[in-house]
Image 1 (cartoon, rainbow, N blue to C red):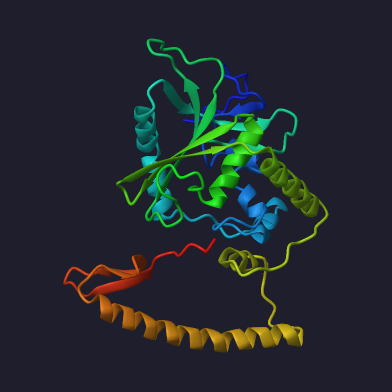
Image 2 (tube, one colour):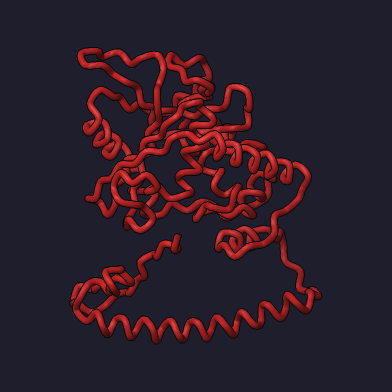
Length: 317
């Protein structure tokens, strides 16, 4: 059941105002995130760093235009199911602190800045059972099938940049100065990280958000990029079908035709490369090169190969 209250919350943060404990998917939840607002999960898209949403798609969403419907994936479903368990693990690892559900917040002065952290972290001295008046940090809970995007446990730069943007925005909205990350990788590899507030980074994000919302207000559409969700957004824009010819620029026609040829050539080369790697693996599980994981094999029940999948490779620093 949703507790969609906008009354004063008994616990406070330095700069945030609680909108309510809103249930995802409800009208109140959608309203708190709609229109000319930027949430912590959207800020990475604003600066072009989100692996899930392009700036182009976010612009259409904020402009009230059609975007592809949300589809529940297995990683998202299990991330939601496991959130409480991973949060409890963090709390067990940090006696003296309590991680409580956070709710949805806005900045006290800049109403358009929104955030829904996973947990507020309260210091809880030994022997005391009441939650202190003010949280001192935040907790974000993440799950990942593979740890390629995450650094070693506790690494200072171990948090992927898109989650760092999310954490920085949450701190910017609530006025807190540290976000803890509790991460479960591959269902058994538990890691922790921290991100501390950086005013220079926060200002970059704020300035980018202001510019983005100004472009939304004035109808300045971002350029089309190579993200798949940009393509999905364009696919849902037409409202109707006219059986007519539409003249397009020669440069765009050539780009499309050349890309078709290159795609076929690349697909053929990829198939050959996969065959060679799979032949090397044989009955094994993973292909490695100089201790670097290249690909992994998923077998069928009879031991033959169901699929060969690449490991994500981090860009060189």
